[in-house]
Amino acid sequence: MTDSSLELRKCKTCGNEKPLVDNFRLFTNSHGTYWTGDCHQCLYKKKKAWNIARPKDIAAIVNAKDNARRRNLRKTNVAEIRAKDAAYRKANPEKFKIHTAAYLIRNRERLARLREENREQINAKTAARARIRYRRDPKKACLKIKLRNGRKRATQAEPITPKHIIDLFKKQRGSCAICKTKLKAGYHIDHIMPLAKGGAHVLQNLQLTCPFCNLQKNNQDPLTYMQRRGFLL
Image (cartoon, rainbow, N blue to C red; front, side, top):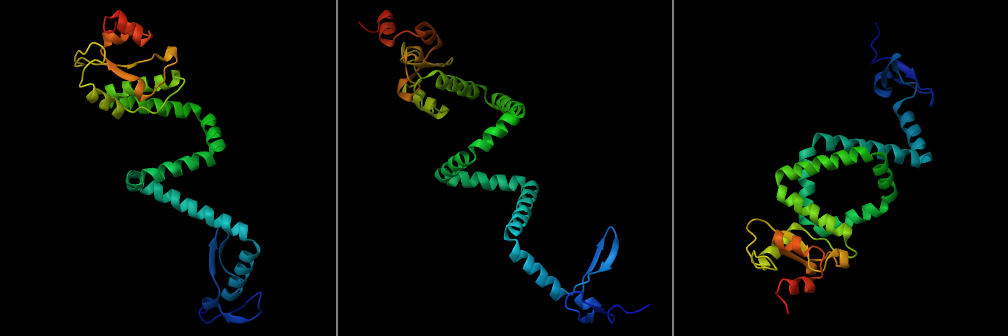
C-alpha cells in the first residue's frame, strides 16, 4: 500500500507533477471517490476565468443562494424576525408607509396575478382572521364592518378608525346627539347628511345616536327630521 502523501500526480492543464494530497482535491459522488485532474492553482484560474466570462450567471447564483439563506433564516427565526419587524414599524411609521406604497406600486401586476390565482385561499384566510377578531372583541369588529360599509356606499370617504369614534363619544359626553339620552345601552353611528342623499363618509358628517333616533331618522334630511321631532322651528 503506497503512502498518498508522497505520491505524485501530473496536472492535466499545466502538465507539472505535484504531490497528490497537497495539490489536488478529493471528490466523492454517486460514481465513487476520485482525485481531480487539475491542481489547485489551475482550478482557481479556470474558476476565475469562468466568473469573468459569465457575470450574469454568477449574479443569479449568488442571488439564489442569498435568497435561500434568507428564507431559511426566516423559517428558523420567525418569532424573532416578527418582533424586529413590529418594532421597526412602530419606530418608523412614515418610512414603513412609504416603503409599503412603493412596493405595492412596483409589484402591482404581480400581486394582482397572485391574488387572482390564490383567491380561494386568501378569502379563507381573511374569513379566519375576521372570526378571530370577532371572538376577541365583538363590538370593535362590528364597528369596523359598519365603517367599511359606510366607505363603500359613500361618494366621498376618508379613513375612519375606532379611535375616531371613541374620541367622538367623549366629545358628545356619552350622550345621543339628537335626544341627549345617555348611550349606556349602546349607540349607532349615524351620518348627519345621509349617504343616500349624497352625504360624505367623513368625520365631520358623523354623529353617535341612540338606536331609536337613528332608526327613526333613517335617510331623512337632518333639518327635516329635527323639525319633525320639535328640536327646530
